[in-house]
Image 1 (cartoon, helix red, strand yellow):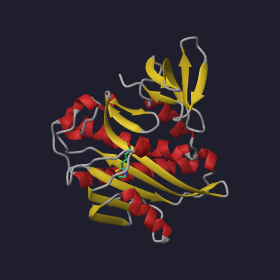
Image 2 (cartoon, rainbow, N blue to C red):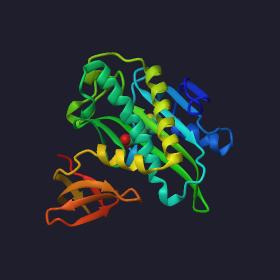
Image 3 (cartoon, rainbow, N blue to C red):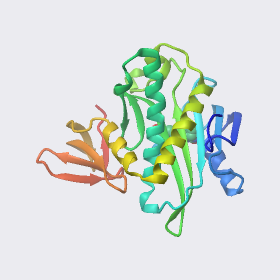
Image 4 (tube, helix red, strand yellow):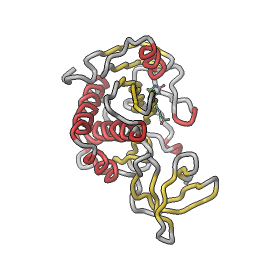
Length: 256
Ligand code: BTN
């Protein structure tokens, strides 16, 4: 692994229920160093956002968890870990697109809070769990699922894979290494200043500045995503020009 920290401890599992669960257990036993990466070739009970199940095809996709033991990150700033993970995944997907199909990298965007899309289809999902103690984030598990070589995903459900987008079968281990490198890159940037992370995330926000269908408190709502606030709530401008920030408990993207 051509990295300094991320992935230097590398645990490769043939099969596991969930790499996030496995990582959490290692943390409980104090057996996970900063930067430990767990990769499973098969995940039988992958966890997704909002309690959903995350499916991966055995030997075809990437299911991985990265353990961070962040130093000096206060709980109020924890959304920056979501941004770092999303930016790293974005970079990996964008490079895969660029190398295989030319000038397509600008089709890759981050849908708040941290889905990575190619055009309007989801190619990767992220599930983060942080442990907070005394107002500080003392550990974090970045769970990342990337659809790599699956070819039977239902485009009607807005899912896609790198293979479906590029027509090429990709080397998963190469992608995992690149992911570790990009995570390390953004974590290094963060250690100096989080500002470039905030700027890049805002730049890559899906539908930024475009009126988009949402549901706000269960009712249809049209607004344009502008940025996220420091707590990670999406800042949207409504049709009257008012800008407000909403969390996932109130705002979600409309189904169409
Ligand atoms: C989402 O619903 O978009 C988040 C999906 C996150 C899936 C990954 S796969 C590796 C890690 N282990 C899990 O159980 N979930 C995450």
